[in-house]
Image 1 (cartoon, one colour):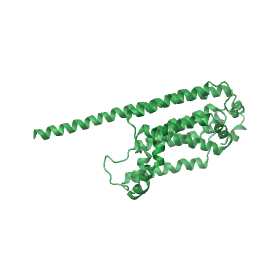
Image 2 (cartoon, rainbow, N blue to C red):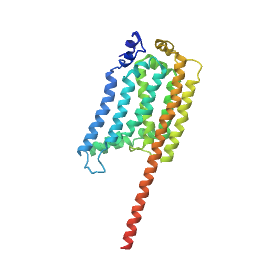
Image 3 (cartoon, one colour):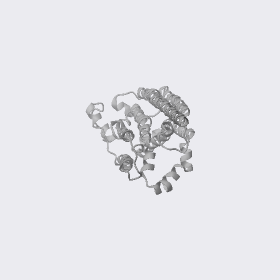
Image 4 (cartoon, one colour):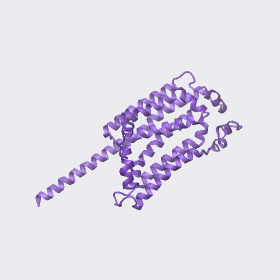
Length: 303
């Protein structure tokens, strides 16, 4: 259902109207279906042994596939569900949509290890001549460098919310699509070094990952506070649009700021927990390897 179709409805707050406000944008569906299909094709190729000989240690785990497809599902929910339609009416809904894309869908996609799937599913010639050179190319090295990826993500959030770009996105669909593409691209770059499940030109230690996330938390807080604390309406579009659902535009803006302020921090906490858990797990495995080497040396010396 388009935005215009919702506006002419007699009661925009009726549950039936909200539940029917699903849309079907072929461009969005294709943009999501193509990478999902390629990912599943790659997983199937890995599982069939078409890319390389299989051993128990090299088989693909369903957990990775589930994480990736969950991320795709959340992207579809953010872009095609009633959230997408009512984001034109309420800034707070727009904020929920952005948080879903950047703080929920993006880390799930990265956790699915799509780069690893591409490398393992591709032919050796393609991997050697195309994928590995691309992965280690200068543009990818620059974009994936943690300082750059962190800065791009933070800059995208601030620049789009405090510039004419956001107002343009509410007036022109192509600008709105560009905004979403920017959020997803910078979020994927942001989460890539944090999770560390895919190969990358540069890798961060676990203490550096914790610092990386800690520094991101106040940025989302400050952005939320800047929106929440504003005494003037930042986007005139919502003065008329929010009235259609009987909501004060300024109160809705305060709610949007509060969502960014609190949800951004809350959604980063699980990432901090994951990094700590992964750090302890790797330390434990390293200790087990050291113990095994010492045991083998002791047995060899006794013989």
